[in-house]
Amino acid sequence: MFPQHIIARKRDGHALTRAEIQAFVRGATDGSWADYQLSALLMAIFLRGMTPEETAAYTDAMMHSGTVADLSAVPGIKVDKHSTGGVGDKISIPLAPLVVACGVPVPMISGRGLGHSGGTLDKLESIPGFRTDLSLAEYGAQIARIGCALIGQTKDLAPSDKKLYALRDVTATVECIPLICGSILSKKLAEGIDALVLDVKFGRGAFMKRKADARALAEALVAVGRAGGKQVRAVLTGMDQPLGRTVGNALEVAESIACLRGAGPADVMEVTYTLGAHMLVLGGVAPDETAARRKLEAAIADGSALAKFREIVVAQGGDGLVVDEPARLPQARLQVAVPARRAGTVAEVDAMEIALAALRLGAGRARAEDKVDPAVGVSGLCKIGETVAAGAPLAVIHANDEAALAAAQAQVAAAIRIGAGPVAVPELIGETLR
Ligand code: URA
Image (cartoon, rainbow, N blue to C red):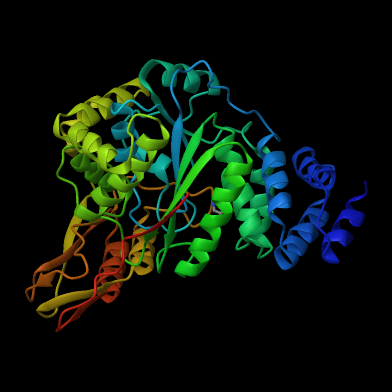
């Protein structure tokens, strides 16, 4: 099966066979296809699309391009959550211990952020000592012991995605639903899960800016996940303004701890409870979302979710005392407020601009090899619909560099618009696809 024949078939609008798709993914994994051949087929797929059957075959081939974790020895229905990513999206950190505290094992393999803000791994690594590089054997053993492990992508998990994603990134073929489905689901299905809840974001700070595009992606993800034999639900959630009041690695861990103490921002709690409720239902510990939500609220109120987080932190080598004393997390040298220039109602907090300010401070990566600064970012962010007095702080910038501080202050000030009248608060929780 020559690569050029497979490329020509897709170029001419034909559906590829399972064997052709397997040859392509094998070619990406073992290097037997040249980068230009892989790229040509990626572009042909981008332009011609894939049928649901092709997308399912592609996802399956990607998942089997490496190790598929076997967690069958761990009792219970294993459920994970995946988010398509957003600004201030720290949901995994409160959500995983909360769901585990309610009796559902959560195997979670996360990525590092490339672009504006850090990923879940970068956030967790701001906890002194926290290790995210567990082997798959350590991962399985920890899930069996305490119900959860929060680790990074290992090189043996869906290795074809690493190759293909890097090519997509530089060949303008990222924004393609079948390719996104294969990329996201191959990694998640290789974790050893039974069920998956997807948080598909839409809005200014999201990968999908339009809700209709997010819905199309969610529909495809649910269909392909189901074709892979897993129970999958997808919730559409809004990402026009940052989630919560912090953007930055240690700052987001501190906010996550506040959530686990029952003192988190309303929007972070709402997304956590919504996704968590679906996880409990899929995990078979609650009959419906209303009962599930009551269980989640009880696990926050009685401290069991916080205790589970402490247990996970300690199990992965982290300083468990941060859970009680978040001030032990890295602190930036400079902390300066951004004052409101006028009184009024917050009408806009542009998630993308806030993310770029955090990136400028060093909270994210412009290139894969960049190191993130765990301490920097933005806290105390105002929310759309709040009223502010002239001179009141709209946000606090945490910086370790004077020049970056000044630039971030100006950028955050420009990202927040204060209006005179009442404003419409953007939609946070959209529909669920199941
Ligand atoms: N996230 C992924 O992991 N893959 C994609 O293709 C897009 C977003």
